[in-house]
Amino acid sequence: MDEESLAVLCKALAHPARVKLLNYLADYGTCYFGKLTDILPLAPSTISQHVTVLKEAGLILGSDDNTRTCYCVNAERLEELKEMIAAL
Amino acid sequence: MDEESLAVLCKALAHPARVKLLNYLADYGTCYFGKLTDILPLAPSTISQHVTVLKEAGLILGSDDNTRTCYCVNAERLEELKEMIAAL
DNA sequence: TTCTTTATTCGTCGAATTACGAATGACGAC
DNA sequence: GTCGTCATTCGTAATTCGACGAATAAAGAA
Image 1: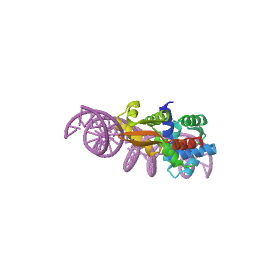
Image 2 (image 1 turned 120 degrees about the vertical axis):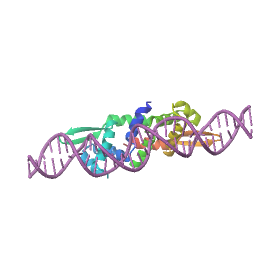
Image 3 (image 1 turned 180 degrees about the vertical axis):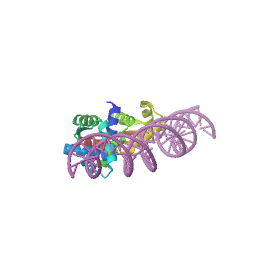
Image 4 (image 1 turned 45 degrees about the vertical axis):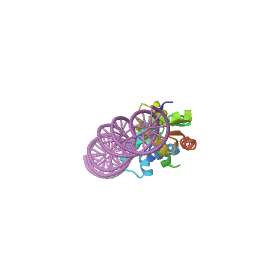
């Protein structure tokens, strides 16, 4: 068990806004950044920061679909988290 | 799904030292604070802080066994975490 | 009593987090 | 071309985190 990598993943989910973002993406599959700004009462720049945290942890993936950015859950990475937590 | 409570639990595990502490307690059942200071290269006061974070999140329980303090995992709370993560 | 051990709390410091608005860049619409 | 939209980055302020040593409290040993 690697404490460091579990800590990194947990840290990414250590804020309710990021839990909500991941949860939303898990439910709806994919969506544009603009949609994410609708589901949280935060400034776009703040949401962008939270999205970056999730991206850097590998929990979500972003693809530049022309002018808009399309985000989705990284299922494999999420599975890693689930397995590590289940193994506690 | 309550984003706030999952975020609180994840925040408690958002540091490798705390993951290690929880992991150790999960493996060994119970132990005194002094033993915890052996498994981490940190000052006792720092470890006490991390233990307090885990305690406040409800993930571990501490009972004052005479002069020494005995810690153990709060299995129900840990189960809550596992279920919330599995539901993502 | 005095000393030692055990665990915690306090004070402090630098680093990181979280929030925002402003500025920026990139693409379409007009 | 100019304007508006979309997403991000930058700069900044307030707060929190993480680490340590010092001080503290409580119990037992010398």
